[in-house]
Length: 338
View 1: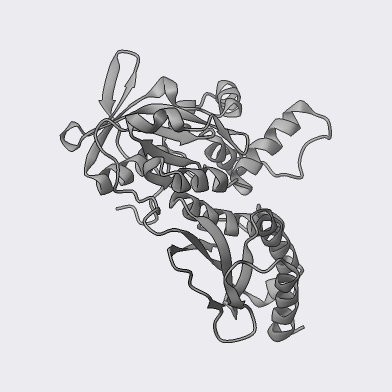
View 2: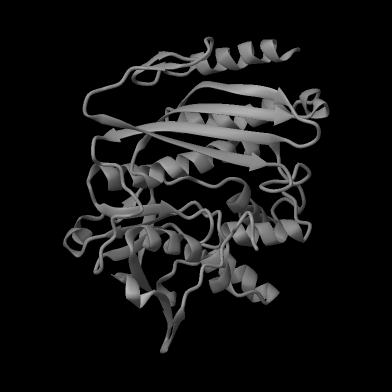
C-alpha cells in the first residue's frame, strides 16, 4: 500500500459519516470547501503531538493516541464555547511505522471519538519522518456571532469554576514513568482496575464539549480556558489575559478521588498533582455573580466545582489552605523552560 491508497481508504471512512453542516467538499481536492453562514463565526485550533515529548511509542496504544490527538483539539474548541464540526489530521511517521498496523489503530481511535460529536474529517497530510512520529490535529468549530468565550473577559467579583476532577492525568503519567502499562495486572484484581483507570485518565482524556457548548450558547461564562498545562498555570493565563487576579480555596479544588487513594499509598501530595499536573482537559471558567444561579448542576453527567473569585490584578493570584494564604505560582508544563 502506498500513501495514495491509504488516503483513499481514509477518504472512504470519512465519507461514511454523516455530512457536517455547511461542508461542500471534503477530502479529494487541494482544500476542503465550507459554506459560510450569516450570523455564525468559525473557531479554529491546532495541536501538535510529538513522539518522546508528548507521548512515547512504547507506552501508548495507537487507538488511544488517535483518541487523544482529536481530544486535545476538541477541548480547545470547547474552551471557546463553540461546537466542533470539522477536523484535519496530518501525520509524519518513519518507514517502520508505515509498514506496521499503527495507522489503522490510530485512525480507529480518532474516528471513534469523532463519531461521538459528529465531527467530520475533511483533510490532512501524510509524510515520512526520519525517526519520530509527529501528529498535527486541526479542528474547526462554530458559534453564534459574538458568543465565542475568550480568556480575557473575567471581571473582579466573578466566580471561578472548574468541570470534573483534577490530578488524574498527572497521577497516570507518574505511574507510566514508574513502568505501569495497560496490559499489566490480573483480571478482576482491584489494584489492576484502579491502575487501568489512572492510565486511561492520561491516555484517553474526555473533552468537555457539552459544557463548552452550554456555557457559550447561554452566555454564562465571562472567560474560559481548558486545563492542559495545569490549574496553576492556566489560571494565570486566564488572569493575565483578563488583567485580573484570583483567590481560590484549596479545599474546593476537586481532586480526583483515585488520586487521593494513590497519593496515600505512595507518599505523594494530591493537591500538588491537581494544581500543577496538567493534561486534565477540564474547563476552567468564570461566571458573573448575577448568572451563577443559571449554571446547570451537570452536563453530560459532569459536575462543576466552585473554586473562588476573580480579584483585582494588584491582588495577584493567591490560594488559601485553612488559615494559610500564599501566592499561587504557575507550576504547570512548559515546553521550553529556562
